[in-house]
Image (cartoon, rainbow, N blue to C red; front, side, top):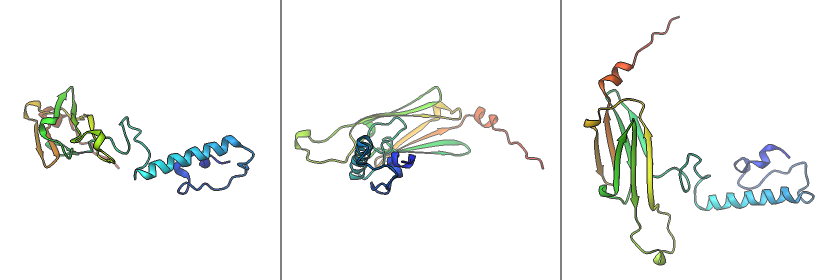
Length: 168
């Protein structure tokens, strides 16, 4: 048996390659492979990979998805929160950490729902900022399910950056 046989994502679509051990002789190995195959089938059925290992609940990426861009004068954070209103979202800035918090509620009762791939519930994304920002000039806008937060860098943040010359 190789280590690759124990790793579920190292197999070819759930079909493992034969090993030197006979699965009929080792019931635990057979059970292990069958459980891995079942998990692979479940995750493949949702159309996603393995659950997020970065602390988020659910499958795939932590919700909401964010995009962070670092420009000369500002940091721009964009978050996709489809199906929500700005009143359902809270934006906080504390000790160099931007926090996006909110809750998306279902429009219908659970008893009426037959199938859903939509995300519901509370979320909180904490984004550590690598620069000091001018807190009184931070701007947040919400349009078409996209939240955009612009955080202007402080003068101190600009002075902390130092270009270092490379010698031959």
